[in-house]
Every structure is written in structure tokens, then in C-alpha cells.
Image (cartoon, rainbow, N blue to C red; front, side, top):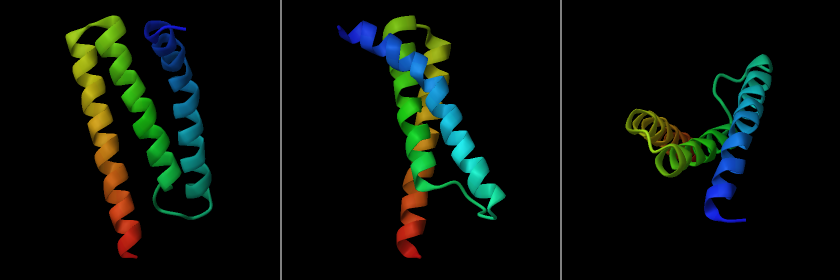
Length: 89
């Protein structure tokens, strides 16, 4: 499997993975926790990275790539902040 086919497959999986991450967060919120878990933030960051690569390499659309890059960057920042806050507590 070449890189292009691997990215197409991974991009198709991101919808499923993102949904699982949202479900994990919803489950935690229903249990009374106010924030998403680190594993949810990690899943969002990884799927955001795959989406960014797919937009950049496969679709090659400037707007889609920019939006995905921003989404990935924000997820990574949230993950980093969540890790810092967890370490401080």
C-alpha cells in the first residue's frame, strides 16, 4: 500500500475515530466531569493531523488545507494545555 492509498484509508477512518472521541467526551460529561479526557484530546489531535495531511497531499485545496491545519493546531494546543493542567494538579 503506497502513501496515497494509506492516507485515503486513514482519512475515511477519521470520521469514525472522531465520533468515538466525541462519545468518550459525552460519556465523561454525563458522569459529571467538566472536561474531555486526555485520550479524547489525543484522538482529536491525531485525526486532525490525518485530515490535514489528506487535504494537503490528496485534495490539494488551499482552503480545505488551511482549515484542517488550523483545526489540527488548535487540537494540539488543547492537548498540550490539558497535559500541563493535569500535571499541575
